[in-house]
Length: 117
Image (cartoon, rainbow, N blue to C red; front, side, top):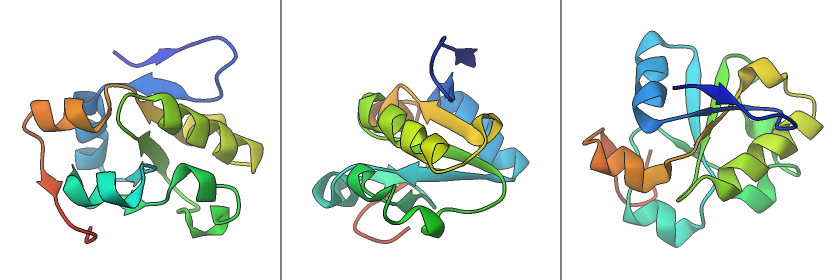
């Protein structure tokens, strides 16, 4: 269930909630893991943007819609959402998929491998 934690500029969601948001449209998954992790398996259609690149490459993020950040366990994705907030993204657009890519895969949701989307 989507939840806010005091002091965090984003909403925490599960992989299943993220999947529903993607089906509704107007949402993009941003995978912030390293290239090796991303290549091993990622959310189908995800945009890859390593956490350390979120600030310098902020202009590559979609300017409209929800941004659903994902990593392995929710730590780097939470940091990436904080970076996006610091760069001016509205808190209502920022989400952290806190069960991470393993949760997405365990839920049998669509994935891709390699460096493709």
